[in-house]
Image (cartoon, rainbow, N blue to C red; front, side, top):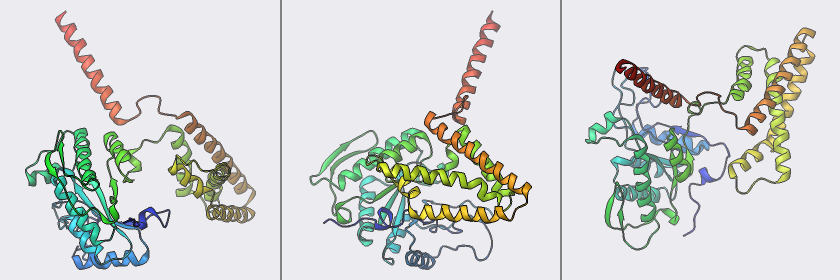
Length: 373
């Protein structure tokens, strides 16, 4: 059976919108206001149906087993995510509903059966968010100690291997891994349409990102976890400053060069043909070469022209300086990417910490040698 899977995620709008964390009381706001999200299941159904009707692409729950306590008891009432997804998939038509699964808490054969059940309820609209580690205080409720950090993703690899084999192989199989030793594994039915659900991971560490890049369709990432290169900071900080404290005319004066060169570069690359082997860059090229982006650029350019005509000579000179500076920063930005620029000292906080530990060990060894002498 060849059917479309997760159509809102793999097709439709390029920019996807999601509702995050509605399976938990308070949602994403730690507050005591009376109108805060109470997390009644009827509220979840109504929210899911509103999101579906509005054309949002998905709902993503938080896998949480107890709240934070205190006056707000933030996320103190939670629904288990796979069964929560079953109820919402049964009452919606288009959007994808994810389940968030903590790998160590769900044996792979049980998880595979739960996921397939939800996927058939939604007729191919279930998505799986794989979480390889979590808060130890919540794992204590299950009597489990977490693996060493990077080993959590090694466990996740085996766990996912079992699921994928269950969903694709006809004959029963044995699995002999480091974390799972299974005999005569078999399971039917397969996921809806015979193909696995869309997979997502939210690891921000090196091991987590490698796991997500290797195995998942989506990576739930945080930009603040990626250190910006020096020229990136030099390029963006003036834009942020102008956006915060500049005049209405100064904002487009600073932003326009960036938009203009993105448009020109996108159109130039589109004329050469998007690289088939690099779908991510192909999407980038299509966006910046699109008529919609061109129309936005024209609108911003016309706005700046109108505002500049109304400005005083001193203000016009200021707008020119801002635009010229933005052009220079834009050049440095592209040059930085070509050179793959990094910070000249420690690239990450972790590297700095490791360096400090090495220095401390070296200093300790030197002190010991001196004391013995």
